[in-house]
Length: 378
Image 1 (cartoon, rainbow, N blue to C red):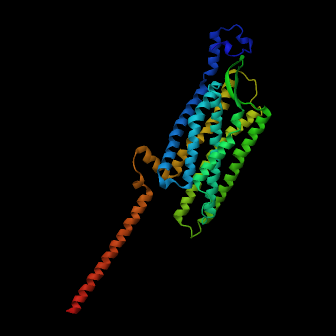
Image 2: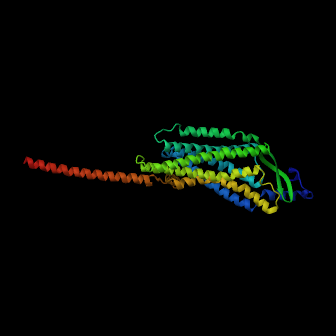
């Protein structure tokens, strides 16, 4: 690493040796204390998220009784989350912390493509399952108009189509390092080639159509479902057990939607603020460096939190998911210890006891009749 790697734009480097220049650049590249803290948090989230989402995929794909429309969509979300956690999170965090993109142009384009595809898959999956649950609760006698597996394939195709244009605008360009006492250019950055004005419009449109509008539609449908279920609780035609199952499904769906809304809000707000130049300021030293680290990495924590917390949410809100996770992790079949199994066993036992009692009564009657017959014959 030497001064020939990039032009020096400040007289600060005029009398510097190569070793001093290298030390100055390494100081910029190496994460400070604030960045190291964020890296540890994100690494822990990545580990928890990969294990949790892998369990979701494994449980739903290997258990036929778990393959209802809601669980298939949750598995679809888990696959999208795995893509984000395994490929997008590490490369994005390395880029944010070291302020340079260390990889090829192909990877530069691929990371954004996978990131956007996974986000679109999450949005469209939530919209579909909300509409499907709404139809099942509002019009319970109507059969589903489409198969869930076909919808999942269509969702991925549409997500990839929607994600395709932006990567073509990316290219590697020189990365500028700014500090209060000097500015230098070293390394590369992965950036769009379009104008600042177009970037501002794009981020605003993206926030509206990929966040606000879907969230409004989903929220209205969830509210209508909860209202319908509340009225259905007074309807004697709806079985109590069936009603409870529907309520639990809607409760889980609302929790997933809330987590999605909470995790994506800071990212959209940050991108819009950045495109409008809200962070352009010439402040001093350490405070400015730490502020840059926080404003970049805190939205990342929120953004990836949904991918990490979704499996934990399923475990808390669904006893079936919790039991299946335990069965996979502990290699114990939880089927026979589940509440449903115990309920069925108790019901079968009660029926057998009633049958035995009835058979005993019948036996007693038959014995009495035989005695009477013998007495009459005599």
